[in-house]
Length: 100
Image (cartoon, rainbow, N blue to C red; front, top):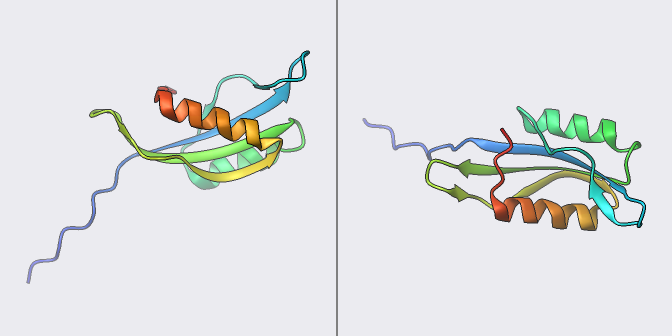
């Protein structure tokens, strides 16, 4: 008896971003977004950065860059001043930034 086809899995883009305040007091990304190999690694990395920056967020989303499709990002971990960080994450998701 034939097995039904399993749903196709697409690659995941998994990112950690840290944020700090600049001289004007505005929340800005610290360096470039860091691409991670697993969600678990992203959460561990974000937790390790949490006490060093004003805000840290780890997120993931399925991506099909070959056809230009990207799912909505899912927050894996967020701490500190994350409202602006999550807004920035969404702007990156909307721009479909290539992190490689």
